[in-house]
Length: 440
Image 1 (cartoon, helix red, strand yellow):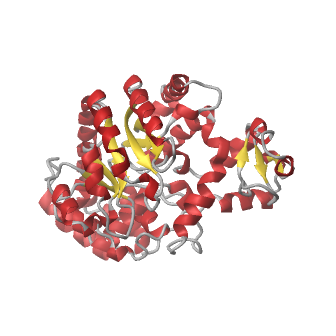
Image 2 (cartoon, rainbow, N blue to C red; image 1 turned 90 degrees about the vertical axis):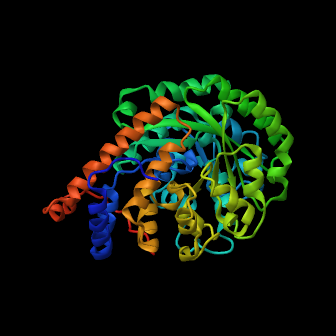
C-alpha cells in the first residue's frame, strides 16, 4: 500500500495513463528519466559503471593487459598488475603489455570484450559470455582500492542524474591489494566522506559477497559476517553470488553455517541471489530459510507455489533486473517475465540495474521496459520506488529521511506534470548523450 500522501494521486493516476499511452517512445523515455526513483538495491559494483572508467584507470595506474592469445588459461584482454604477471609462466608473460601502449583500435577491442553486445545477448550461451569471458577480465583492477573508491562516487553520480536517492551495492574491500580488510574499508569510507560524494545527494550502503560454488565459500562467509559487524556504519549485509546452475553452490550447502552466523550476528542483513534460472527449483524457499529478506532475481519463484506463498506475505522483496535477465538469456522474451505477476499479487519488488556497465544500461531503462511492457499504473510505479527504500538495508534514521525525500519528489513530479504546460517541461528534460532507448 502506498502511503506517501501524494498530490492529487487519484487525479494524477488518470493523467499518468494518458501520458504513458500517448507519448512517443522518446518522450516516454524522457518522462521516465525525469521520474523520481528510490534506490538501486541489486548491482555488482565493478560492473555497474562504464567500462571506459576501468580502461582509463588501468592506463593511468600502470596496469598490464594480455593483448595476445598465447599459452596458459588467462583470457585475452585480462588486466593484471606487474607483480601478478611475473608469477605467470614465461610464455604467458610475453603476451602482456602496458595498457597505456594500446592503440586506439585495441582500446576499443578491450571495451568490446568487457561488454555484452547485441549479438551476444539473449541467447542460450549468453550467461557463459558474461560469467566466463567478461567477469574474469577485470582481474586486478577490481582489487585496486583507489579505483574502487572513485567508482563509488561515479556510481552515485549516475543515480543522481536519474533522480534516485540510494545505492546499495556489492562492494567488497576484503581482497584489496596490500591492505587489511579494515584498511580497505577505510579507503572507501574516506572517499565517501569527501565533498563530491556528499554533493550527489545519493546515500550509499554496501554488502560483501561470497562466490557460492567455491571450495572456500564457508570460510569466506564467516569472514564476511565478521567484517560487516565490524564495519556496520556502511556495510549492512552480505550476499551469495555466482551461477546457480553450478550444483556446488546450492543454498542447502550453507544451512548450518547461516544458522550459526545469524545467531551470532543478528544485525547483519541478508540478500541472496536465488531463482536466477528458468528451471524450477527450491532455491528461493531455501534462501529465505537461510535468513534472506531480499531475493536477487527470483525469476523461477513463480514456478514454485511454496515460494509464492512466502513472497505474498510481504516480508520479502524480490530485486527485479529485467535487462540483465534478458541479456543473459534467462528470460529472452520479457513479456513472459514474472515481474508483473509478483507486483500484482502483492509481492514487494524493486527495479535494479545488476551490471549496467557491461550491459550499457541504466535504471531508467528498467522503468522504461516495465512501463512499456506491463502498462504500470502510477500507484504501481510509486510503490516500486518506495519499496526499494523500505526494504533497503539502510539504518532506520536514514531510511526515514530518504522516504520523506522520495515523497516530496513524487509530489513535485505530480504537480509538474499535472500543470497545463507540462509538455514544454517534458521537452526541457535533458537526456544523456549517446544512450540508446532499449528495445521492447
